[in-house]
Figure 1 (tube, rainbow, N blue to C red):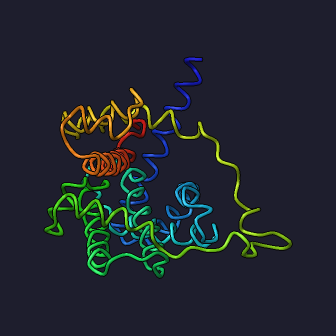
Figure 2: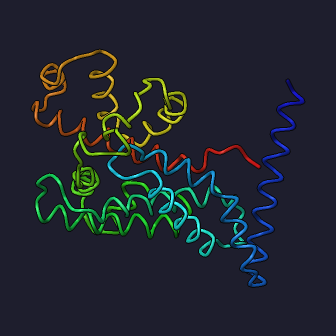
Length: 263
């Protein structure tokens, strides 16, 4: 078993070294062939990241193309002096490109004009910060960049889900509909990684917010029971839960690229 682990580690190290070599050939010597070769070798990553958004109303092939654009942008924007693996740097860039693709669609649900405008600012700031930091930014960093409150920023992030929707009856291929093309959800899929990152993300919440989440999801208390216990209104409890969950999602996403095994 140890031999297999060593072999896997060596392979990862070799891939990282090859990525670095191709990047240096492109950035230092203007070798466009190295750029194209690296883009081709990163196709599996592009497909994997595009696959996260499969079944959301856009053809997977289109999403892969969008992801490939993100790969090319990451190659062009990579700083070879930084001690970071290219795949870790490219991941948030690709995800930002895919999210921009969805963001540019029309709005399907009613969202206030002010929230729509802030959502566009948030999305732009998030992309810019991702490129600057080499990772997904935190909610605080985004809020500071757009000069908005944490609450308004979280609302804008949540409003991004109100984009164009498509009918499940829409044709998705020969003799099939969109509904038939969607795979069944595996409730265990991805939970292992989330459990590992959740503890760290919870540290970004205040003691009160962590306690509210514990009472709601561990103790299974209702929002009304929680409001009586901590002395705030049920509406405030509901809002705090929504904001805490949104913040956890943001913080977990921000940590994903940096949790790859070291090369």
